[in-house]
Length: 99
Image (cartoon, one colour):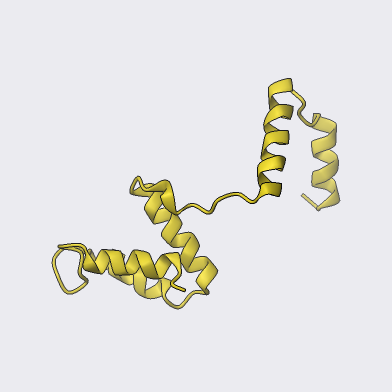
């Protein structure tokens, strides 16, 4: 199974004018892709998602799991009700983690 980064890289190369040997890809983009290739697959996928989002293609984002959808709905409902942490609660969390 190809990672998002591999699909993105292949798309860049196959799209007219976006070959590292052609005139479309800048030296900086080529260097970034070379460096990204040495990263773990998860990080390469994150880079690919960011590039696709920046370029206006949000179809590559990972869908939420049912649990994540539930948590998001709960968080949005809390925000709608104005149920936010107090300053004291936030300071306590920061102190707990040494911030």
